Amino acid sequence: MEKLKAKILRELAVSKLTFWELLEKVDSPLKDFIAALKELSRDGLICNDENCFYITENGRARINPKSLEFEGKICHLCAGKRIILGRKFKEILKEFKRIVRRRPSPSFDFFQGYMLEEDVIARVALMHYYGDLDGKDIVLIGDDDLLSVALALTSLPSRITVLDIDKRLGEFLQAVNKDYGFNIEFVEYDVAEPLPKNLRKKFDVFSSEPLETISGLKAFILRGVACLKEDGVGYFGLTHYEASLKKWLFIQKLISKMNCVITDLIPGFSIYPTNYGNTNYDEFAYKLGLKVGKNPGINWYKSALFRFEVAGTAKLQANKKLKIKFVDLDEDLTHLKAWKKF
Image (cartoon, rainbow, N blue to C red):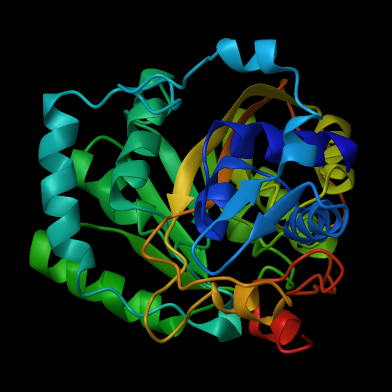
């Protein structure tokens, strides 16, 4: 908590920030972030109104002024993603944006949301950079982001299969297949259920944006790795907002036990809008006992991208039914069930 409070003070020592701007800059578990704000306010180190938070003289006294002279910035060309879109990927991005306008709306029922279109194409570009696209059989476990469509637009993968619980997604992909001549396979599937035998060890690459409860993370990763052939590759996202370092450690240990090696971890790779009209994940902020103005459209919710490789053959766990918790009320504030408590 002390590190987090120090980070908040440093940010506010540079300039006043709205709640949403501060949240975008301070990538931490939401409950820790809120607790830190309240403690700093209680101790007279920061103040706020509906417009912004600002540091007090007592707060500024906690900052080494010399440290503020040193500044490092994320690369403005790649936004820290380590990949820049070439001409063909930029063309695909334009078409991808046209297609996804008709996508199903996110639902609280499945805790859905989708990343910015630019970040979907950036993932495709990164996959291609690592040789994980051309001629590969790719499985997606959950596909709110419509990564399957972006992959199909390249015409490079040999096979694209989507496993998802939402029937609406299957209907949408069927329509896209018809309009564009794609062959995206859709399998209605709940990750709590055992993986069908015909999908085990059949794919070169899997990608997922898992639920961020312990049981959800475990289920999505177990099913994904079970889909992989020898020397397969996996991609998945993980946030700090909903996942404490304990969860990060859990997932690292799980991956290691399955004979997989993390090759890349890129913080803030994927950005998610939080207000989809019918589904608004910003609502929690207005129930916290702080003065918080409406989000003007800041996309603060970021997810780190993990890439891992199977070191030969994966050590698979039993293919059995799993019990999954959709929401972790101890760590997550954004879900309807969580913020309604405030």
